[in-house]
Image 1 (spheres, rainbow, N blue to C red):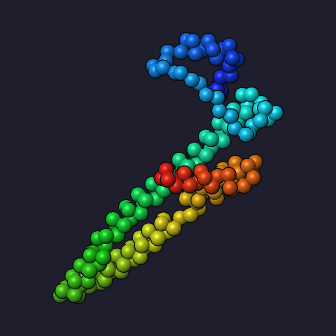
Image 2: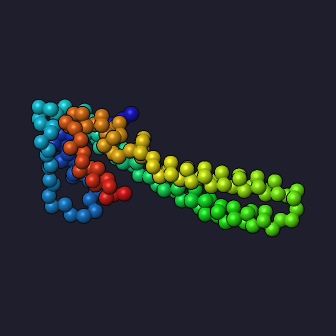
Image 3: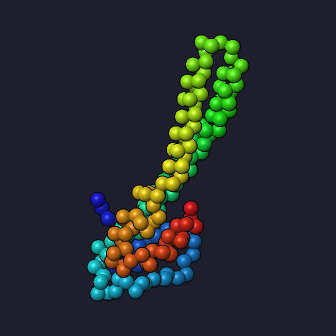
Length: 171
């Protein structure tokens, strides 16, 4: 896979700027530097690609987590919508069994009532289960394996606490 980054000499960068079709006036170029990597740590393109992988991994984890939460919310809404009418159906079966004069229909109505009650119980349990998911993509960001793996070189969870806070606001 070709690199998404191109390493340029100062002369090549100057040539690129001369040929670039700018749509607005650029009056300054700022070079930003971090405390890490230092010049001793810098291994040219490999360092830049490594930093890109870290950022891409964090972004992927946050995207996965957001998609999982949206899916969870959608699933709970669908289950709750199915549950909405079930108590009414159960009440109707009770009324129809009470008003039913036919003895032959009584076992069928009773079986339907039991089946509806069981469905309500199961769906309610599913709603609770889906709401309480806290593993895998539903785990807090600092408990996710890719994030923990990234934290090892940075000395622990403190370095990503700010990212978790920002991810919370992003959601």
